[in-house]
Image (tube, rainbow, N blue to C red; front, side, top):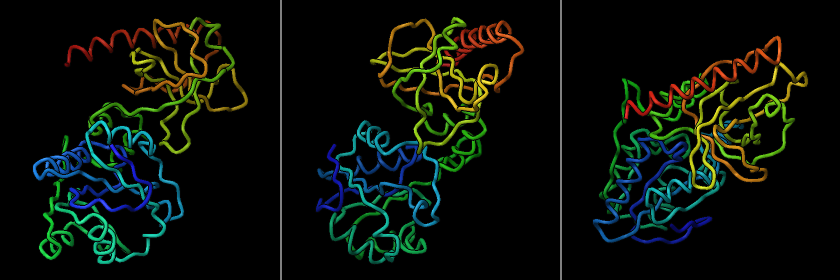
Length: 308
């Protein structure tokens, strides 16, 4: 996959348009259709992506992301897209839909096809839409493909729905809409080694600033390190039994693992929430609960296998 930082001429492209945060099941259909059309016409598939969420500029706010840009690019590469063009949103934020279509999409990519989701908008005041692209297809000699809503359990798959479920700690449903387990990444750093003294050595990581925050609690997770997968018990939040400084921590106990991995990057994928945070009266009661949490994982992982 070729990544272009800024506009470049890529003629006869099969374009896919969208921000694609999360690369959920609906996004996958959009990208795979662009790839399919490119292969049929012996040309290249091209995705145009803004580097930051447009709402960050339009509303002067910070939208919590499901994927960082690097994570998104890695997943797009795995899907099989040929080219990605990265753009800064600010120069285009006031551009009218007609000007964006003519002076950007047509001028630089002379697309044979454009694929978007059913709710894709672009241009100043969201003037551009699926209908706008459909109406101009013959004029500019491209075929337009609109991917309809992807519905699971009466819910249209969308980033807003997925974010709402993650904010509730409902990873079972969020992951079903994503098509994979929501994950975070980080380098292992030194902590206070409290968990180790309890017999639960933990890897501490810095939670990426731009990613959506999960609720405080204890989770069953999958940990990926050096191409291997492990079961893990993750705590996100404070350490109320020991810590009075209210420092938020992300620490994971990797089951059946005790190697020194300081400085290494790990990927942590969320399976399900086990419980909320609790303050215990004694170390022994905390240790007892941690063993119960570990037993939950042992039972739950067999439940998962039985569903496959």
